[in-house]
Image (cartoon, rainbow, N blue to C red; front, side):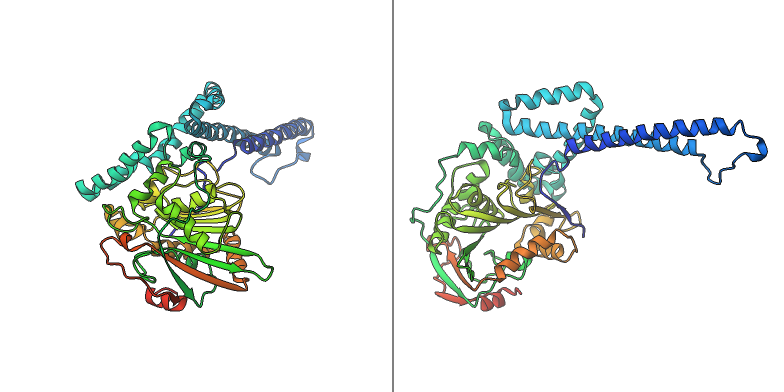
Length: 466
């Protein structure tokens, strides 16, 4: 299966670099012009030499022909690079206009200037933009029509209705609207917990650092494993290093409970506001409280991992909380939010995961620092409509598999990921606590308090995980 690994931005091409390369190619073409002139003079001199002294070239092409070929090829390449630079810049400018609305007047002026100078670039940009939209947003609904009326209806609800609701009130579509929504909730988002969230703590014994990305993802509480019971929502690992430094790593569950049950802090209804840009949610408050109960405080180093709607909580912890978040890992995220150049963001998305498709094509900018990665693949190559999602694409175990493929792919970018987990392994001690939803949040499953502690090995054994 093919992995697509990038830094996560919609536009991953720098138009200025393309233009600079085009300039170098034109300079090379001018130098070849000089060679053509010398070759022409040589041909003129050879014409004056007696026939028996004439040089016969062993190559199929004469020096003049070869120089002319190189000049023409360099010129065509320069033209192509400049055309590509214009097309990609037009896409970048369109993205900026969608993100900034009326404040994107400068982008609009530059956009129109390029179109006036190079109308063909506009056609190329239209094509690239259409390809992007065909795999995101409302157009995604079309790909599920093969699942019948109900399949199309479900996708219309997930993608169509939610997307239109989100774009109302100048929120803007998908990840494109993230910068505006961050500004809108500035100074309104609680950065620390008020210690009012009900939860039950369960200590985990025999804990060590995860061996890698895939092994780390298995720590996200989820209904597949049942390692800590159906009510587990958040896990916090606390690493103490020989230097005295402390790092917290939090793992956040996805949606839990029946869709109509709003008593669970991790029900979809209680966190859908994060998707639209609301300042907080019950899941966000739950994670803040869990971190503080584990000993984290303002300024503490906290790394976040989240699945599905839990990834939205993780991104908000990174952008809005008072913790120092240095590492963000999300899987199956409905929004890809840039978390700033101070943090490394690792995001995994399946192309056939409809929840991941709610990101509307993804972020227009890099998701984090230079080591940040977006890892994508199609989980199930078979075209089976909605069943493709239900069977496998949107599951923690499916994303563990993709993470494992990346780790063993030989991709040189996996080195920085390995180094992060090697850093965790250097801790002198690791403490772990799993936080459970209260009894009223157990949904249709009767809640009984889990044991006060459980070993990580026993949990892994019950989950069938390594």
